[in-house]
Picture 1 (tube, rainbow, N blue to C red):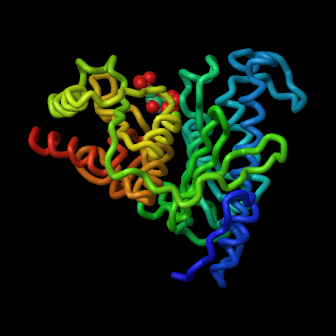
Picture 2 (spheres, helix red, strand yellow):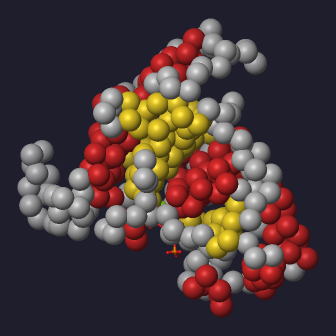
Length: 332
Ligand code: AHM
Ligand code: MG
């Protein structure tokens, strides 16, 4: 690999992306452009999220906005904004979105990339002013450029991701992404309208004392999961659960913790979606020394079979996930 000089905290995302690209002599700039398109969509969604309470966007339906679209819920708006940014940007030939059943063709058959997105995750928190997030994952298409992309392009294993990331709309908005050589975080500066490098080369604690799961599902958890959680309580770990995966993941990444969404009777395969929740966060996790498993294998090794398939997810500090895995293996 080609060594690249580290850039100082405070550089803009655009400059950072340009710098990264210049350290790969044969890079064509298409992935860089795609990342900029995603950042632009992130800025637009940041704006919508921030004024949501004021203009009654959240939940209001039926009123026309300036684009002539019916006013819709924020998650639908985020989906529209993302699709528009990716279609206009030209680099993505297809999009997979939590909001839509089928492959979304952008019309850019010459685009080399496939993007999987959850445009606005944490639906239960949207209307109540609690942190929410966007999650994205990028693949290189495997069918020839210039043709209509197919399912084969969309159902690649997590190891084939060329980049992944999330945007957390929290007390600040932060974009965290990786192209496979480390993870960096860029906090949005409202006054400049720019994402600024604030969290260079994120590394996550090996161990932690935060556990995050929906305790209300306790009775539906398998015995090994209950045994692990009982151990967390015995050790007087801290329970923290927002119910926004991006927020819970981000906190645990920085502070050290484990996030669990085990199978339940209601969701026997787990609740979370593999392509645009499990894969991208597992990609980031592994880049920072964390671990992500479905209880049987690393999340990234799963071969997907459908666009919206679900997976159990145990993700976080390696020592914690290994301890949980010990219980799961003993229970088999
Ligand atoms: P969503 O895609 O409908 O927003 O669901 C995903 C969310 C995650 O952000 C969060 O971790 C989880 O669902 C919370 O689920 P629950 O309310 O069952 O605890
Ligand atoms: Mg979601």
